[in-house]
Image 1: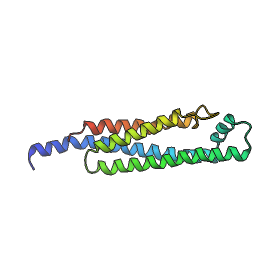
Image 2: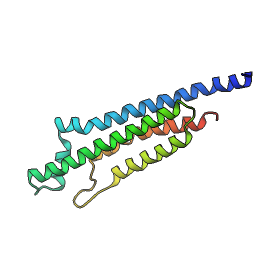
Image 3: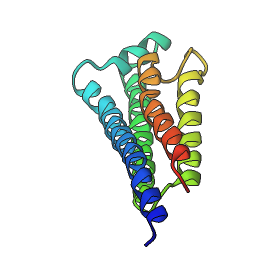
Image 4: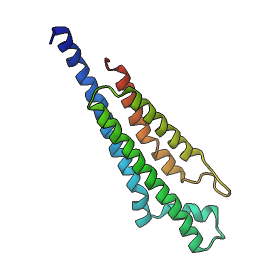
Length: 154
């Protein structure tokens, strides 16, 4: 190995460390967000209140059905997001995962913005605003990873 190659590898390692750190933070945030609706369901139950506000005349059974649909959609999207973070982490072990990071960041951003802005019938937003805003936290970690991965040497 030549000195130039050794120097390039050494200078790339700290940046890839930053990429991996951002990816691990994103994964942790995503897992927390996946668990949050279930924790909320068992404690504060704010999603039920959100549904009840939109549909005050609904029966308890109808409210529960909508609450469950929103809750499990958030959990499912959280799990899918975690799979995306794991894919990015696996790709980061092999070098700079530029394409993977870019595609996954774009998917995460579009999903988060869709959750934040989608309404329906009596809902201003189907997903409560707090969940929509919290859903942007992994996007920030994804942005940090994306910037870091594009700054690494090829």
